[in-house]
Length: 201
Ligand code: 5GP
Image 1 (tube, rainbow, N blue to C red):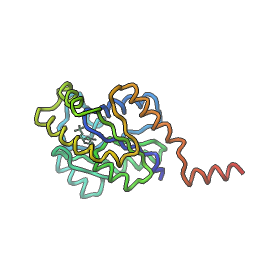
Image 2: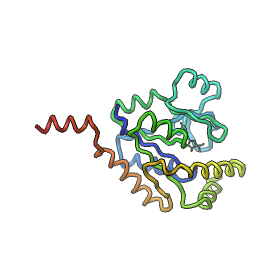
Image 3: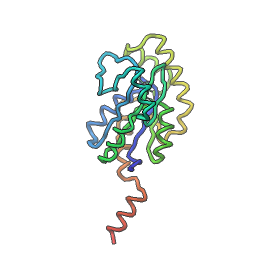
Image 4: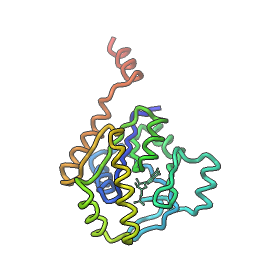
């Protein structure tokens, strides 16, 4: 298993994770975005099967029972989970798999794939996040409050991430994000060094 070809990104909703992922696809061709399943309601502009697989709570609970998820968590009163089979397939096809999951997911994936790379993406401060969440006009004030509280809690865990991107200026953040992804192809591992050594002789 090429478990070093996994990138986990976490951070508050509104920090720019989705925009960075979307842009990265224009520059890196063997990326694969892990589409999570969720019981959250679909938002305007979202497409089922592209942004998430939007499923019912019953279907989600069935998935848990059948051990279909690599990891799953309850976030903002909704279930979110990563499908095991799609990740295994993508890794087998030599893709770099990108996860946009929360801290609980990051911990679970890191445990199963210790050589994966994790990146925490956030805003310079709470006020910037609050303005962005209000400007995108997708959530009620209550949901925004809950997201800010969740963001504050998640910020306590940034030390456990390999990289940290403060998304103040989008172009600089994209540069940083692409550099991290590109560096993966130079990361060494036992299998790779053994192969190179055999060929080199
Ligand atoms: P949103 O509702 O804004 O799309 O996502 C809310 C939070 O759920 C985000 O922090 C996002 O990273 C997280 N999330 C999305 N999919 C998954 C998943 O499959 N597993 C986990 N643990 N978190 C997820």
